[in-house]
Image 1 (spheres, one colour):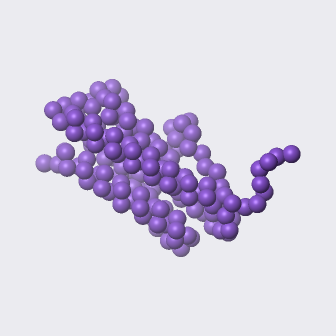
Image 2 (cartoon, rainbow, N blue to C red):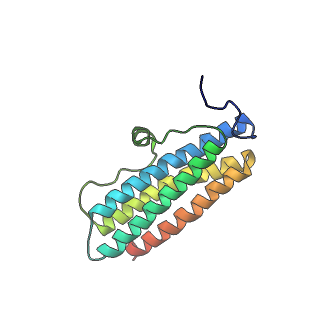
Image 3 (cartoon, rainbow, N blue to C red):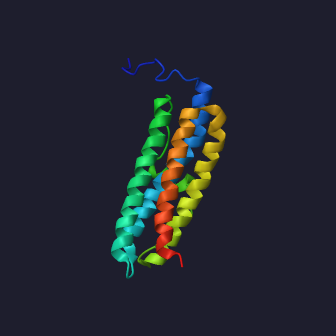
Length: 161
């Protein structure tokens, strides 16, 4: 006999929970890809502003991990599982591919911005769709959007002319 309770972990309607998971799960996947690619860029960045970009990429990674966790915990709090395993992220992330090996900081900054932009499309879809479905979950997506926009701004400042 299993020790797992059959009592629902949330009082929210199961259809609403499924809808929330439909829109927050892709955010978790894209943010997990951003965190992985951001760390890859952090290790391989080169150029005259190496230290600033190296440290900034660590902040972007930390934020991506934090907000992936926030979205994932919202899904799980509503009683549903999600799949953000490495294989799943590799298959389902809607983000562009990061260059391999060592790259000049301008290359990596532009590529990480493109990954953030792709993630923002996923987040904006969630914001739009969750508005009528579940305000608390929409608030999670809005919080993530604000953080991504700030990280994008900090990165863009390094390559804007």
